[in-house]
Length: 251
Length: 208
Image: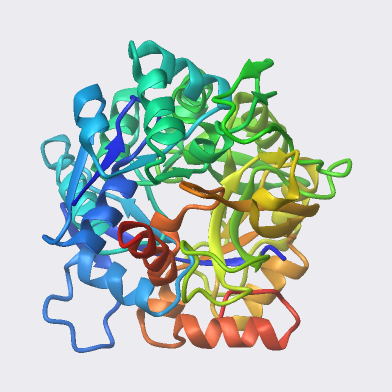
């Protein structure tokens, strides 16, 4: 039986972790490689890096981070943030990323998704959707949630599936950082509309939220950051809890 | 001893390279090449594969003499080869991804899309799934039945003969996820991404 996945996400800026584990005795708390290794040793099903480097001159730092991490972690590694072109994707994959997550570029030009999934295979193309509730619907936002687009999230999700995305990483902008739980309605609406796996993101504050994301949100995988970073819960605890609630996980 | 990972410009093989180098350390030489002479002289070959069946076969055929060299290595010289993901699928006679495409024909069978049962099963089959080990083998030595491996695929290899099947996994139905016939080995899952247990399979292959 296929297991539901738990994916910890680390924010990386200028090659350093800015939102990550800060509860264990780390030799270097800013080292993405060390943090990724802790998670993969702890049973994380995949690791996600979100590159939030703002300046262009420091954009290259992520390549070095990916290269080092992929030599130490032997679970899938997804990298997102600032990916603009096929060339960016090619570089990240060559450095050892297994998947890339494309956000703004996919909204601006869906050809990036079509071309990259043809060239590299759908299995490594994740489309990240940042959505905010707007009346009865959800609107997608770009540039880390700053720019509105007027595009409906459900319609867009379906379109990205048709363009060749292998997975969708759906983040609720309303819930992100609030710790009140995923936007279950958004997750389940998208998940029931598409035939590709959905990764739920944004709003996890406790282990029940992970359960809800899978059971009610119908997500194949759940992504979370702070509940793992601050030592509130380990990956192992999360998996044991999901297991106790009847959710299939890899233990 | 040396192990060659065939670099035929099809998809992302850096994870395969990293995992083999991690396991081999400095004891075994890992080459990454499409050089036919180097392939011929190596002790073992790894055939990775990402993307579609057709794109991988096309990429193999782009390199003049590569298919013949691999045939010679596997069929005539009976040296060990490990196919990973589409690398395994290409062992078949024919694949149906994108369009009907002739495979390497080493193991009689075909590659068809996993039945998603009208949307009940999402595709690709992505994530960790248990393997059901069907028989004793060299490549799965010390791997427990029901171990978890990492999968990413939408197509499955359907061999004509059951004796080729080393392990299956259940997604929509029981499908083949590992193959072993004499010197030909293959995994549908990604040992290079299956954590320590995956590295153990790589270790088993290196130590055959």
